[in-house]
Image (cartoon, rainbow, N blue to C red; front, side):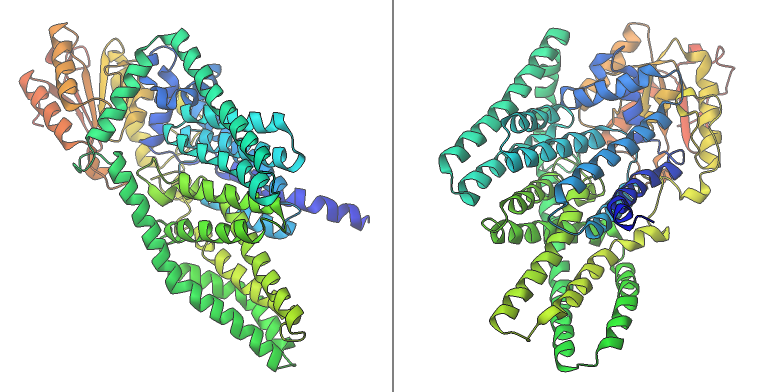
Length: 593
């Protein structure tokens, strides 16, 4: 047996396992809200381009190409695309961190990040594409600094510029221009070159933004830009009203609350962890016959850390805020400590700070966004923690031989296992879900019959029956336009009916309430009243009823005013039809709202 060759291949085998294991659950589970929103956008992006705003246009094009290339099974294909994206991200992260930390330590961090990713919306949406562009850009930036390669630097800047059109809040990634400035000016002492490289990076960034805007203008004219300004006005105008979860003020307050919660958790757990590690080192120095205890700790450490992770509770309320606060602090220590000793590791620390602070902004999920963007931050934070711990112990050893010795390694392992232990409850099934707001893997056993985009997927039996029923009811109404209200955008995939509004998720802020009501009246005036399909929020597994109660009240008034008939009422979904279409659809008796 060629042992050296086996050792050389083993990290890549571990990386392949981390990348491939989500294939086991790729065909299980989907939610009706966010996943449906992504797929509906991809379905209509080329036939109804107005449904794709400038803020996510590039993501819509990428997903739309995948959707249009397949006759059916698009959701499964987009889940498999997500698996490939995370595999690429894990590979780039491994290549960046290798040489700075042990392979096994990097793989532990990547494995934990992979577990987190499967607990969120595991489909290729704008968040996933956003992480792909960000990871590729940071990898190219790292290579540019490692080899002083201008082409990689420009490519990194261009990718981050394009990433704005994957998800608008990615404009915050422009902070990455500080990394080449830091590398050359503060790490290498080359001030002039640092300014030059930062300027070149920024020009590539702005050039990509300008080029994409020019392409959009040629393809669609000024309308997307007018729509984007209206979107920004709606978001900022709703600030502080409590009516919109996506406004600037709400997002900023959520970010600050996450950081505060994380710091409080760090204040509770980190001092005890450090004191325990120091006490362990002291015991090992004072008690020479500590060999048995080493074995006990080595075996029991992971188990105790796992119990600590369970005790931490809900990762949304504790774990992600804890990591949102501690990862930037750990990276800040690495940024400052290594800026002369190891400039590239200092650069990686700077990238972790950019990722950790920029990603939670721009989403009403706050720190929960770490479920998407955790590969570099988690693996890097684990590696930095252990390396800083051991190097600090080494400095003490040089000043006072015999005081610390190699004993710090076990203390570093204790720190590592505590941090990893917080991630482990994800494996227990308490948080492990195959998709956002869906049931656990074991209960996703039924296929949705007769809905091509969902072919090959399994969901819970009740959802499968309901979706198939709605698809059958909508089939004879394909010539109409459809309004979908509530967290049910997936209903656009169940019918050939075209969307009535330019916005697929009308509950959100993109269309103001006044324009919403006016457009409904306009449809009646043109003798094209829409069919209306609403999800009963009280039965939604996410527990959120309506994003916009005001628009729902306006819709109820519209239904009463024009004598709409409740055609289907099965607790989950309510389908309303104009009275002139009831007979054609099979006939139903009028019912109360």
